[in-house]
Image 1 (cartoon, helix red, strand yellow):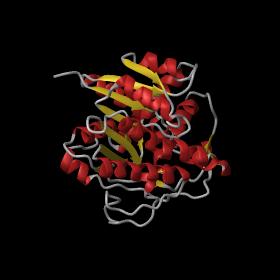
Image 2 (tube, one colour):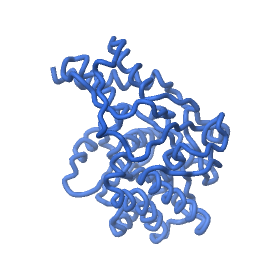
Image 3 (cartoon, rainbow, N blue to C red):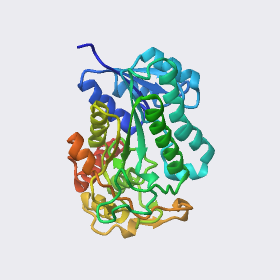
Length: 330
């Protein structure tokens, strides 16, 4: 059997790293799209993922995407690239729309116009933020593939466009385009701008005497949090399935930011985190999603996917990682 080839956009992100490792282990030749000259993440990716061949390109530049697809000649394309920070999307809504929304169209068109519509399977990274915390289809079990969408941020709106244009290309051109509606998935590769990694990094620094306080916005929002390594395995399973479809990946349980805080501080022996955490209006959003809870039944039944890392295990591994990283500064 010939070696399969994959092209990953968003190679510098959390999911790009995990997915590259998985595909390499499965025997793929892996290409990664990296944006711009002198990208500050390029050296880190080359060191961490030496088996990945990097191609310069940008989701807003159709010509570069066509060139990337021609160069990689991929059996599978995983579109993970996006402006994915919800808070940032409120500050930069136009850029978010161009990259996170229209960028999906550009990827699909690059596959189609290069004559690979039938041969190349495409994975589109959709998101639970499209649901927006409203209009549960089945309140007791969380959102599933049939639930209504009501995005509450420019990020969620842009992702919803990407989701629907992906489905449109599936139905209009017969392309294998599968959409993974993933709920929050975290891990040691998460950027420090995301609340989970911001917490675990600060907890490690507070424990080591490198930092005294942590500033956060609201602590009551609840999320369905899983481990990113488990979720990229689900992405791959979707792409291997005989039929392109939409699948929710989630844990089926929800936890508040306060719960995450409590577990993280407990990992370093601090039972009361309140003296260390300060509220800051700077981290409040114009519109907040109160709760996101997913129903992964379809992915479990059809793909055989199931998360392996539970919520306490996720927090534990993130705190342990940041303790090891921050200990180098002592």
